[in-house]
Image 1 (cartoon, rainbow, N blue to C red):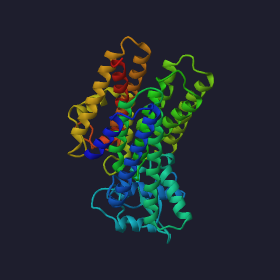
Image 2 (image 1 turned 90 degrees about the horizontal axis):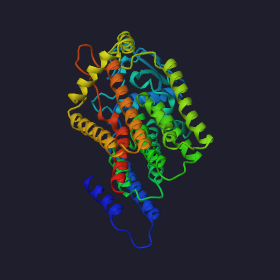
Image 3 (image 1 turned 180 degrees about the vertical axis):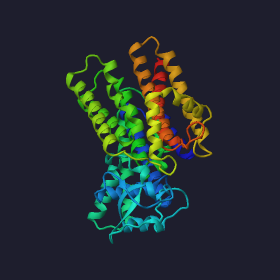
Image 4 (image 1 turned 135 degrees about the horizontal axis):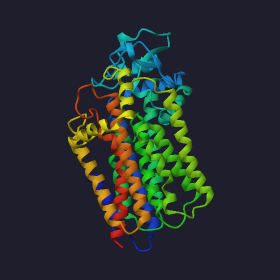
Length: 440
């Protein structure tokens, strides 16, 4: 990764030949970043064996079950390495060739792999398989994978080819998001920001550019969202198309993972600094915020009436914790702060990554207040953005506590740094704005 960063730095920061304007620089930066992302993604697909990414088989089962009609999960009597209690699991019908493909690629770590001996309900072509932890995601979270599996069925491809096709589709979505993101900041010199955005896109390309998971879609959308925040403060015009893109990005982001629901309010941030915005643009932004909220509430009512990890936290305990959050939220906050202070992570490598994230967020907040204290509109813009990011973080901790942390454990157990990757770009975005102001 170090040589790639060096190449990217040289291409972006090296002087350009005379006659090349900022637009040509932007095009060259975009081409180099896309080439590096495509290279990393293709190598990742080729070199990463199936079954080697987080919760991959639970995601695969979920996608296949939706195409078989089980859009909303239901009780099943089977177990997996992630959900060993067959009495309380939820899932749906999964093609037998998909089950066989997953069993043939057992990497001997917890990935949602079904226990073949526990499957008791079959119809000759499908088996009832559990995938509790992925059943809460709405279908929109799996659009690239659903499209790939549907195309694979039409082409009569076997499970292996459908799996790789899904990774290719996800890589295509990631590349499209990077392309859109890097083209959004336009008209002024933003070389430092483009370098940061490009480096982040390349660094996250393995495995987030192709991974069979909603996390890939979330990470992909975080780049254009951050770049849209830059565009909101850039120039004098924010067109209807820009508002549609901002609303669509925040809407899909929130519907892909509930913890990022506060990002929906980012669609309203342009109205803070653009008081003379046309009414059409305002309607687009408000509609783009309200409609996903309605869809999100509908899905929470229809598709989440179960525990995502019943073997660790039974549904009755989940309900008790949710009621406690509503009645006495102050009891949860010390638990969350304990986890943050102690840098609790699921794996041994998580604490350093979590430390970097919190250092970045504190630096962004501190410098925002110092640098923009005399510009109330921009100060309010970046403070609101930072508060919404902290809202996402809080929901991540709430979800892990209510559904994963065992009774009696201190803090919040199960935090992965990848949950915060989409939020890091917004922090970098704020720091970019600060650097631009200091350079004036």
